[in-house]
Image 1 (cartoon, rainbow, N blue to C red):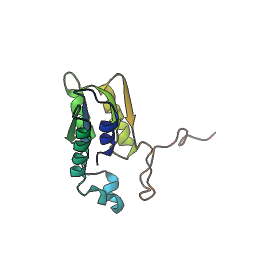
Image 2 (image 1 turned 90 degrees about the vertical axis):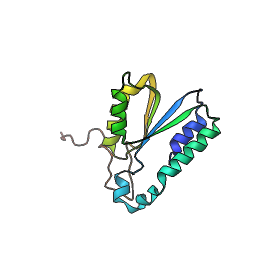
Image 3 (image 1 turned 120 degrees about the vertical axis):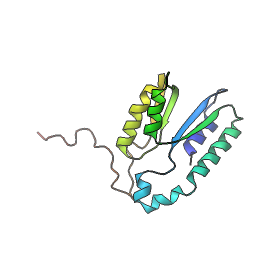
Image 4 (image 1 turned 180 degrees about the vertical axis):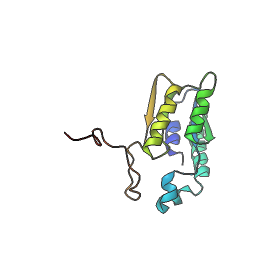
Length: 148
């Protein structure tokens, strides 16, 4: 619904001409397909997201610009990396898939887009759902190694 992005627009001091870029398919993730509890959340999610971001940008006085790219993070990040020169960001906040390997892939693809000294934040790497227990987190360090 764009709540994280709307919070950033509302609470982070945007400089004149700053841009917030959001990437989302609005199709949901694996948990939305496999768990009915989550699939209901997708109804009108794109419209709610666009409305929330427009309200936040208007409340900010319109100093910054919000750009929504309707695509997968993998495709959008690869495309940004291929631009000459590559698009650069001071802050990158990854909050897409709830599958740890997807989050890791997004981190690796986003890293070249980060300004030197920038901040890379990612969410859901250790996500766990009690209602969808088959979504597992990566194994803690040391697991899977042979015992002495």
